Image 1 (spheres, helix red, strand yellow):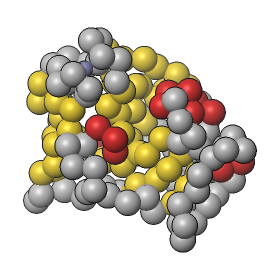
Image 2 (image 1 turned 90 degrees about the horizontal axis):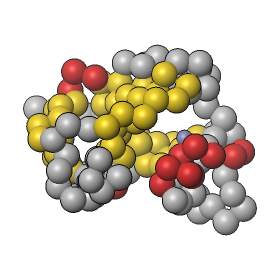
Image 3 (image 1 turned 120 degrees about the vertical axis):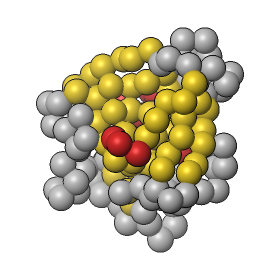
Amino acid sequence: MSVKNGSCGCGNLKYSIDGEPINSLFCYCKECQILTGSDKWFGVWIPKDNFKIVSGSPVIFTRKGSSGKDMNYLFCEKCGVTICAEVTVGNFYSVAASTLNNSNEFVPAMAIYTASAPNWAVFPEGVPKFEILPPNLGA
Ligand SMILES: [Zn+2]
Ligand SMILES: [Zn+2]
């Protein structure tokens, strides 16, 4: 299996990913806009067992996702960067692609919650858009 590594902005938190993601997407929901200071979050979905914190210990912020189940955001207490969200309803982590050491590892397969996008949002060409969450994803 191929191992990929990433870290927060200051290097306090480091993580590794084993294997391939189950999904990769741009999320334009309001929460992601606030979180990223941008129009979207680029999340790479990694099964829980394949994601490991290898250095540092993250602070956790929990909110309810659209499913009503917890979304646990792991962020660095020093630099404030969120490295991932644990999506408890799906038993996976949505890892912030921006925190991967190699930003070119993945490309988005879809764009979700585009109905919540601001009017200055930028959408990738040729990537399927969904106004909310596609029904088969359930996160
Ligand atoms: Zn940090
Ligand atoms: Zn979102």
